[in-house]
Image (cartoon, rainbow, N blue to C red; front, side, top):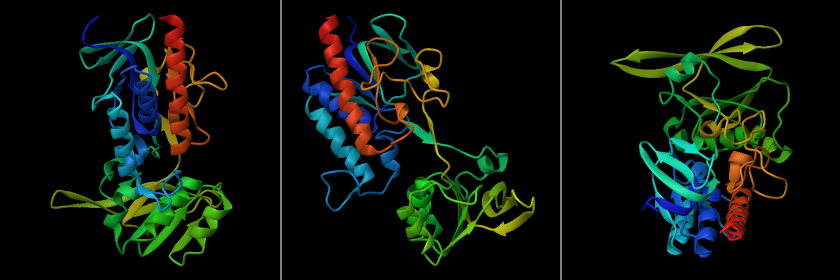
Amino acid sequence: MSNNHRKVIIIGSGPAGLTAALYASRANLSPLIFEGIQPGGQLTITTEVENYPGFEHGIQGPELMEIMRKQALRFGAESQFKVVSKVDFSQRPFKVWVDEELYTADAVIVSTGASAKWLGLPSEKEYSGYGVSACATCDGFFFRNQEVYVVGGGDTAMEEASFLTKFASKLTLVHRRDEFRASKVMQDRVLKNPKVSVEWNSVVEEVIGVTENNKRKMTGLKLKNLKTGEVKQVKADGLFLAIGHQPNTELFKGILEMHPNGYLKVQAGSTKTNIEGVFAAGDVADSYYRQAVTAAGTGCMAAIDAERWLADHD
């Protein structure tokens, strides 16, 4: 076998991929992790993680992922900060490409996670990074004493809004319905903050800005009320999108079975995909819980599923 052959290749990192690597390496499977475009997954763009067991006073997201990575590497996992460009799961050993470089594996664990959704407006892309963001914890700091808008109505939107009130002078939630989907506790925490107001039954139609000295800057938004049809322009320094996530499954289209929303299908009570020897863990196969701790749990399951499957097929 070539130097590029491994018993287990893990595509994607985050709590799922790194926990899978920890368990697989402790089972002497010497896994190789391709960490992808966001090493450490979504937690690396999260500041305070207060709901991960074992950290009584909370921990920073990037720090938690670094601890997990070191723990996996300690037992013999190998981590490469590379992006997988193509896969072929039609026969074993499975083929995984990083650009032109080919790797092979007896078993594969997919833990490519999910990414934030965008509204799909041309103006939103134009001002992305110049006032428009999909990550409050990454960019909130830059909006000190400014007026910001958050689009969304679920727990993510409430978390983003809650975080942003630490910096912004005024925060407005924009929601297309007349009630939030978020949990009551999260809603109450946000809505009782005097900085927060809500634009109900409304959508963002356009991001407005100016270009000065070759620098773009967002200055406002056009909001449309879906009930009345009225469009108004408001002053806004920042726009944060919190409208859900898209699973990172483009790579596996036509190869692994997916739900209509793009999340990978796994057999009930396991991490097995429709291809024997290929397993899926974390947010790539979970549109419901989407927590660090559940991702880590399925990462553990995937490694055990892979280990047992390899033992049966050796």
